[in-house]
Structure formats: structure tokens, C-alpha cells
Image (cartoon, rainbow, N blue to C red; front, side):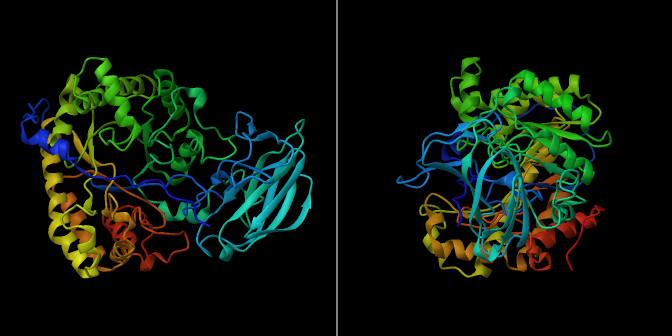
Length: 531
């Protein structure tokens, strides 16, 4: 069983209305305000995949950390249409109605793509737990169940059939084979740690469930006591723990609705727990300019309320600058300036966005870096040129010819333009995301032949050569940190983002992974390069 993925982020897509604004003169020359730009130091970072039952990255040895939030079931009713569950503050079921049960899918992945074997299930409280699909119970006693998992059958379900309201079942852990004695002190999957050791920075955008986040107050943040991290994201304490173990810088995206107290507490806890040798990149949310996300609408509304502009797009860009400066100021007071990198985000394909964000309230004077996503774009739909029907008839070589002859020069052009604007404000140019962007859009994602072709292009060794030219251009044009999107995720009609699709992929046969790791190695980073 595979649950549906989230809708695609159309990364790098420039709306027609925005193009028109640039043509009619919204873009104005930026007046230089700083001295010579800083010397770039190219390095490679990674965007980690977000926690979910269908995430193929498997960062935790306790796989219940990524379980889906409870699904209410009732005998005689359609699947998932049981009564509303009575949950405690951490998401544990406090009681079940008569004839009802709650279930949670785990590891809903293709057969054989996660570890099989004897898993240990630990819990507190009193009740009855059953398992379904790829898991069968071998032994059971109060507080402890041993199950055999055959991952070739796909994922499995944990079913909460009964629970004592006075001592309800909670703190469920489903531990991979071999980690029962160590999971408390060593919560991370060793294979996951090995994969990303040597990265210069980890961006936690998806770990923080940044897009469309509902978090506004510190009390709403995820905690280590949460039933699952697929509901609110991964707790700050664990993100910091991961960075400390890997000795890598961190990149945090402050939720777009977060109040000052949230930002202050977040910064203070980071100062307290993060290795003092590591830096922190701070960004206001993610892609505030992108209309597919709720944060874009929020920024437009706030900007208009503050009188920044009557035009929603312009009000949103200016509010992005305004709120970024407020967030930077809080971090400077709570965390300090020495290890803080203040990031202004923008859209690589649209210099008008950059101009507004850096100019408004002199934001460019109070930041350290300008962040873009210079994707190698091939966004194909029924109305694009070329369109999805035409491209679906191409060969893999023709797709890669297009990437080499069109997508690569286009991306390099964005990098050059962005570098000029960054230089005028004395900002480093960094990439918050990047890599290939071959995907069907606007209905093109439903063309199965197109999806198959784009997947084949992502697996073709020739793509590694195109990536090398792409990374060479980033270095040549003065790019600094480049944070690739993304780590491990299986490919679908919504895109082929993962460097690897599954944790048990052979990295030596993954051209994108090889290209990124070889580039990192050439920059002196202590990564593991596949052979």
C-alpha cells in the first residue's frame, strides 16, 4: 500500500503575471549599499525528506516516529470513518468508543525496501494491540510485543483494539531489529547517519513541516513526547542532536505564523544545545513568493494590512523582508551574531522578487546571504512548450539534450543575475534548493509515459555529467553553499526529487547521488563516495 504524496512544489516556475510585471517595469535597478562581496566558499548541503509513514529515508530506528496519525475505524462503517478520537496533548488515544478501534500505517513502502526481521514493540498502559499486513505477532506480554516483519509484503498496520481509559496505551515504540538496547541513546538509523556524514549543512524545511504550517505559538511546537513526528514535524531537540552528531551546520525555517516568543525560545534553545562550533542559517518560512503555499497568501494579507502595497504579490514580498528583519533581530539577541547566517529568500527566475525583498526597509543591509533555487527545469504540461504529449514521445537522450542545451544555460543565467544582485548588497549567494526539476505539471503529471520517461532520465548515467557542468557553473559564477533537494524519496508522478529512492538502493548505480558526492568530495568534504 502506498499513500498519496503531497502535491508538487512547482519550484522555479514563474507565473505569467509575474513575467508581465517585470516587462512593464516593476523591476528597478538596485543601488549598491555595501562594499566588496564576500569571497564565496562553495560547499554542499542537503534538504532532508520530511517524516511520514511513506518516507523511504527511515532516519529513526523507532519506525513509529514516522507512523501516520491515528485513523479512526468503526465496525460497519467505511474505512477511516470512525468517530472522532479522544487524544491527549501528545496524540495518544485516551479512550475508544464501543465497536471502534484506531490504527496507524507504518513503512508504507514498496516491497523489500526497508528492513525485515524481528521488531520489538514497547508500550506503556493497558489494552490490546494487533498488527496487520507485513507484520505478525511472535510473542506478547504486557508492555512488550515481538513481531516478525516481512517487508516484501509492503507496509504494516498497528491496530489499537482496546485501551483502558484509566491507563491508556501510550509511548508506543516499534524498534528495528538489533536496536532495542541502544535506541534511547542512539535514536538515529546508522545507515542514515553514514549517508549524510560530511554534508556542510542540513536544511530542515520538511523536518519542520514548514509549508502551510499552522504553528504560531511555542506550545504548538513538536516535542519528543509526541506520538508521531508525521503530525507536527521533528522536535528541535532532535534536529540539534542530529547536527551535533554529524558536525554539520543547520538551516532552520521559522514558521510563517510563528510569534516573537516562539522565535525567541527557538533561538535560545538552539544556543543552549547546539555545538558552539556550528553555524545556524535562519530563513523566514519557505518560498514565500510561491502561490501554491499558504504562507504566500498569509504574507500578502499581512503586507496589505500594514499598508506595504495594494498589490498582493508586492505586499507579500515586502512583508517577507519586514518579518525576516524582525526574526533576524530576535536571533541576534538570543543566539548572537558570530555563528548566525541571516538568509533572505527569493525566486531565482524573477529578479523583481529579489529587488523588492532586498530593498524594502533596507533588508539587504541586515542580512548575510541571498538564497535561490536554481533548478535545472523541465516543467511539462498540456499547454507548455514543448507540451507533455510531445515530450512523452522523446527518447531519454532527447530529454537530456534539452536539459543540457536549455535547462542548464537557463539556470546559469539565473545564477549570474542573482549573483549580481547579491553582490550589490554584499551578500553571499547560496542555494536553498537545487538539482533537476523534471516533472509533469498542470495535468502532465497524469501522463504515465511522460512520468516513466522522466524517471528513466533521472537514472541515466549521463545526468551525472550534466550535474558536473551545473556544479562547475555554480562555482565559476561565485556561488557559496548549495543545499540540494532532496535526500531520499521514491520517485512518482509528482517528481523525482530523491538522490536515492530507498535506503537500500545501491548508491554506485545512482548517478545523481554520485555526482553530488563527488562534487562534495572535490570541495574537501568528508563524504562517502560510492564506488
